[in-house]
Image (cartoon, rainbow, N blue to C red; front, side, top):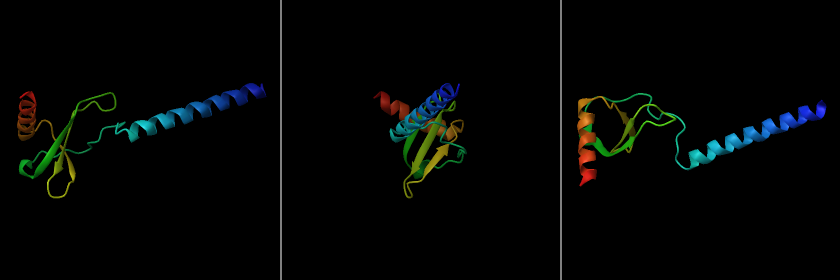
Length: 99
């Protein structure tokens, strides 16, 4: 019974280390394992935006996330996807991609 208990503990340690290393390798590849946006900005800041990143809903986050990088500071700001001005920005980006 003692040897089987040691085997079970060894298997648990192995599985735990594999899952930790897998999570670390995904993070190093730039894969986020949770939502990045906790709060969103709904006030218009369009003229201050240098670039916009659109992250579709996925298995780690059920929300579509829109992250803007500001021109002067380089700060990332999460935008409210329901704000009318954000919808216009996304439409403009999508129409430019189709060309």
